[in-house]
Length: 173
Image (cartoon, rainbow, N blue to C red; front, side, top):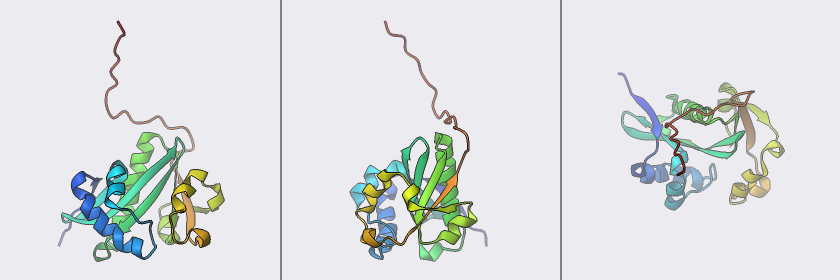
């Protein structure tokens, strides 16, 4: 039997599903907790995966600056794991970020094997931007963080961002 997996940008109609998907992982301290308001505020950073039309996974890509972004809140519903959904979500983030001109992406993770298969390498947490830690202080494990930092270079050279909409020049009169 053939199944359809679709990765797309999240919409406001996905917020409740994203919240429901993230909640059990946050309760286990695997990811940071996000309430519905936080999801709405960062909705433009989320991609979702559908498996035969059902919400199967989610990921968030947060940009810290021209050269650095984070893949976070990567979750796949246990009922849909082992179908390549996590890989498709991360690849979707990488394509989107590269299109915006971001040169490097990182993640803090417990599953280094997954990321190493996707071309990420382990780096020291101290090499990450200090801005990262403004989010980490909300984690129950902040004082004894056991996550591993991984990163992937999307481009060695500055990337020109994709043009998504035409630029309109208006002459001042």
